[in-house]
Length: 307
Image (cartoon, rainbow, N blue to C red):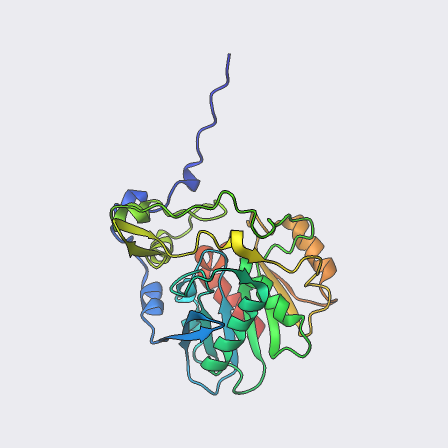
């Protein structure tokens, strides 16, 4: 007799489907954070318009926050204001993501150029080298910059980036499964399709809703996702370089203790490859999307590290 298929884990179901387009209730700290005064700008970097946001006065130490694959600058909207009194804070949407332009092809060097261009435009280097936090994919161009000779970095903080030497990356041009995004007839339909990648439970529905609403755009016939579906089929990654061995600035590793991508074995492997004495900071009860899972715990950890 055939065994019944295992039931789907309800914790991994689309988190916003039950709301039918309505906004989940949010606590006051979150409402205040996303409403905090900030700047929204755009600049040209190597032929693409790049969106960037900033908080706090110029003349403070610089802090840059980098998002992950398929995400956008607004993922940091409820984190960045907590540093605006002590730092000049900026974030960007990588080309191919958020409200930034898509490119015909993508390289690590182009993403590094975007970091440096936004850091200059936002004034992050007005007082000297700046600190940078790279979540997930954002950690790769961050560490590519940290490996350059004399980078303008005070320190680099890896946030749940899987620097796995055994990880296989699709070579450029092999994205045969890449295809245009679906078009959903209504905003509510698009929101109902939002899922985390990789799959994980949702800790805060109001954060998932905020992120999802800033991840979709109007399209002919309805709504679709902002990120470039062909980004990875046109991406070039520098192969054969271990970016953890010899960064030219102090480096720290933070990760979600429940992360599926940066698990215990990989943490130990990364710790062995990082320079001796690099801080290792787990975030309890956080999955891969640490800022969405445990935002206030992440703020506390970063504050303690930056103090």
